[in-house]
Length: 148
Ligand code: SF4
Image (cartoon, rainbow, N blue to C red; front, side, top):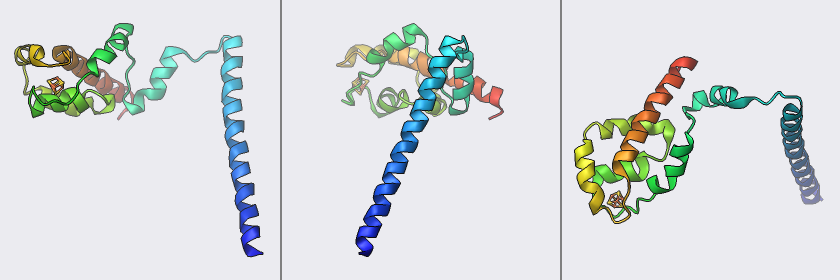
């Protein structure tokens, strides 16, 4: 008897959670569609403001196009542990790019240029280094604007 009662409560709770989720999604969809209809799209500036605390600067179209090549490290280790750690993990999470710049400070573009031809997947190491440095600086500026 008590077990059936618990099952009914669980079922009711999961239905309420489901309905709550659907209501939130429907509200978001409606708001987005009506905003577009009435010319109140939030736009890039609002997007940047929203994501500033997460330290996620926007990507340019060319940076977006380069992402597959910049994500092609297969962790073979040929370039050495330090370089691999930046190419593999240090260039994946923009909020953590400032930590990666500390590793990159020990590497020169000349060293990376010598390593690039040895890389089996031709990871564009200098391009990644430049991307990480640029985005770390952008994220720092965003943090300054939000007071972080
Ligand atoms: S040589 Fe290329 S694929 Fe291998 S670990 Fe270094 S960056 Fe990654």
